[in-house]
Amino acid sequence: MDLRRDVEIVAILAAVVGVLAPLSAAAAENVDEELAAGKWGTKATLGVNMLQSYYTRNWNGGDKGSIIWNATLDALAQKQLGTAWSWQNTANLAFGQNHQQDRDQDGDLSWKRPDKTTDQIKAESLLRYLPSVLDPYVAVGLESQFLDQTDPWDRDLAFNPLEIFESIGVSRLLVDRERSTLLARLGFTARQSFRDVYLAAPPDDLTESVTAGDGGAELAFHSTNRLVADRVEYEGRLRFYKPFYYTGKADLEDLGREALVDAGLAEDLVDYFLTIDVDFENTFKANITKVVNVQFHLRWLYDKYDSTVKPIVEDGTIVNPVAIGSAVRKSGQLKQTMSIGLAYTF
Image (cartoon, rainbow, N blue to C red; front, side, top):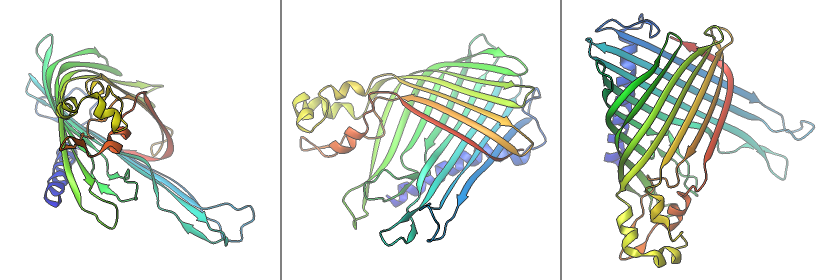
């Protein structure tokens, strides 16, 4: 586990550094200007928001202290490779926590274990061949989180799960104006996931690495707009993904529907693996001043089965039925965050 986790950490850092490295090499370039061949265009926004309160034990009213904070980094680095190729790299990092005090029966206050409010690691490198009606492209990316806190015994795992994507297909810039763009992509995507799982309850901290993979057709749209005299920025991503295969499907098909029902799972569970996924993400950023920023984020995700949770079958028995059941999401998931704080674009 330690070796694989080290490799994952290096891969994440390498991908993020690969996206951010051009920032220091070409900070003077502006992505809003038309790029000359061989020049980097870079942009990054760093934001920090915090709300803090504290009360003594004898404070009237029974209030409790809290610290709520989050930090975000959105970075873009793009380069025109001659007249034919365009290379674009993006990174979106976010992490936040809520620290809350708890009052016991004697009235004493103590700080509880912090809960996450947001957690995201996302990076992508996109290479497009431009001089054609439909521009061929290749892309690689990764998605993860800083802390996995899904363990029922409150044990954390860093960078878990880790998903890696490889895509190839054709693209088309449907809208290309000074203040708005809309890029469409259609192609094939292969995805690999790596997840560490604890083998037993505490104090045993041994973990096992479980890998899974799938592949299918992808249709994606990426839109950017500058509104209200360029003081409001909008970025939207809409992605449809239809997997054609999943490496965890065959074992459950061999068991049959009765074995799934006996394990407390839906009898048609194997059909969930190849259902279409929809991911619709919207971000608004309003610049009140040069350093005061308001961000509104709305994401709707339909993923009927979390493919990073691979079914484990040993000797005809499902080993992880609870984890499989928790990976099923029959309806869409909605996430909304809004923050006001300090942000700086460089």
